[in-house]
Amino acid sequence: MSSLSRVEDDWLAGWWNLRRGFAIASQQPDLYVKLVLLYSLPPLAAAGLVLYAPRDTMWYAPLVAVLPLVTIVVAPVVLMHAVDAGSWGERIGVLEATRRGVPWVPRYIWTNVHTTVLFWVPVGTLVLLWERSPLGNWVPPLVWVAVIGLVALHQHVRTVMAPYLAVHGDLNGTRAALTSWQLGGRHFWYLLGTFILGSLPVALPLGLVYLLAERFGPDPLSAALLAASWQLAWVGVQSTRPLLITALHTAYEDIYAPARAN
Image 1 (cartoon, rainbow, N blue to C red):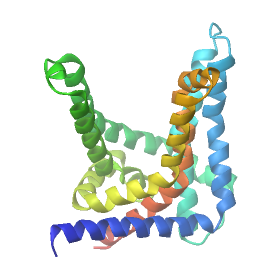
Image 2 (tube, rainbow, N blue to C red; image 1 turned 135 degrees about the vertical axis):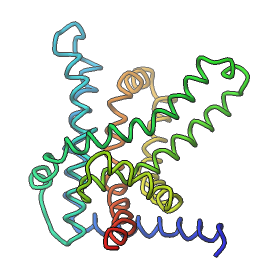
Image 3 (tube, helix red, strand yellow; image 1 turned 120 degrees about the vertical axis):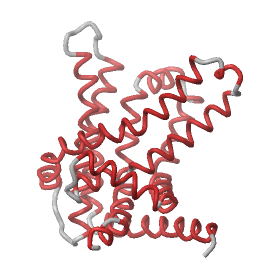
């Protein structure tokens, strides 16, 4: 089989992972809607503080910083356990998914410490070269954006399995990150296709709506979207997770369970 045919098969497999993931979510769609809404509330509350709360109070900065962390580090583990239950045909509620997920948050954070290093060492180096080195002025900005974007995508795909290996594979953070790096190298196009196809159905329309509202909306709306963009971004991320996590879960089962059995 040629390399091109292999890449095409991997992208087709990514499409099937999306469909299989959607089948898991469709068994209990109300659960995923509730999880999206519930875990979107903390960054929405932080966005409200950014826009309307007085900034000279003692509680402003801590709340604005801490509230999105619930969505950043707790919500994905809760959703991962909801998906895992659904993949076995088990029906659980929001409270049970949260009960199962919260104890794994420390392992998830420790794993992400490793993947953050793997991601930001090359990406951050390129950003610094662009901003601080003589190369920054010699190389066109479009080239910098393309190179940094491709490297960032590569690093993310190589580490995208790490949380699943840590939570479902019960590997420690270091081993989960290293095993993900190895699996990501062997199954790069397969995981890339699953990641992109699992993200686009929700991320693309949300991104377009945000850009149009920020660019062409009334000035107060544009200013509000810009001021709270960090907090609102996590609402968008949370909205993509039901499809993305279900698709990646099926990829995890495909590429790791057989290897573990051997």
